[in-house]
Image (cartoon, rainbow, N blue to C red):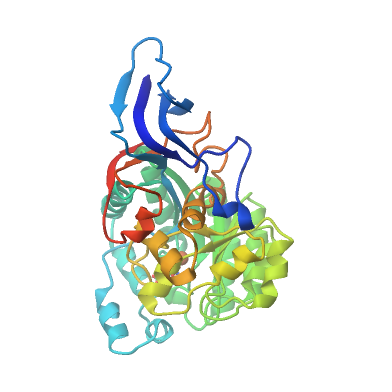
Length: 405
Ligand code: NIG
Ligand code: FE
């Protein structure tokens, strides 16, 4: 099956094959072609160019881009979209002055979502998450990493991972799955954190590994959650099942999570709102992708991660939504672009690179996603906008005409 997109005003996000991520000054440019065309064959980008399209032989469908922009879909490498219900009560509590940590200490937060998830069937969870995925797709996202972490006991963690597997099997989006048993200490283990860590290591990880339900392993390595030592033990256990780390770190405090991530060759280290400058050299000596979640800073009224400093230090940066019911109930990558530009002083090109090729890297997909490259998957958005910078600039408009997956 062939599809020819012609009359493209700007074809954006072109990269040579083999380029897996962009760092430092490289992030500042996006290669484009004007007056372009692009040919899709069997779901892959077969060819593209400028000027009059070389007609594809045989039968093909054609799409007139009417002078619009074609660019790769966003990749969202950090979400928690399998959850039950919503938590707007805590939203109100926060407006009244309680902090995220205070809400968590009162048994709200993650444990609140775990209680609700326990009550729901796989089918109910699947249908809710499917709706969220559809919303993401409509917003231009073509691939999504989804975490467990609202089960907090073996059966419910497996239940979440099975829902993610079903989403992966049924959705047109590319999905990757992360085991996050160490998101909080489960209700039954309150006050017995080290026993809970043992449960994660001795029971959950072997079961998840045996069933092949996860691609990656995550730990909420932060103040009041899991220590760097506990994180290291859990990551070692995960490595025995081939689970590469992608961890939460340095969100609530300078937690030492970057050092653990680097030590264990994590694919990404995520959040970093309170990372110390002293961690920059650690990142410079590693392949770990710093993945920033400015939606969380926006929603929780917290500091933003030092994106500018990271890029100016020659590092790559990826962006993700962190969609979850507590700290960021939104899956809009386009809004994330706006926050990255407005609050973190990224240039539009830097933010778009962070949300496409670097985000693909942060979920192990940069060989197949995140850029306009021959042979990569045709996960594309067709947009009616005068320029790329218009996307973060027009921060509530949705100029997407079509998402092609
Ligand atoms: O990434 N930081 C930890 N976990 C989530 C929040 C989860 C929740 O509040 O339900 C996050 O922000
Ligand atoms: Fe998260």
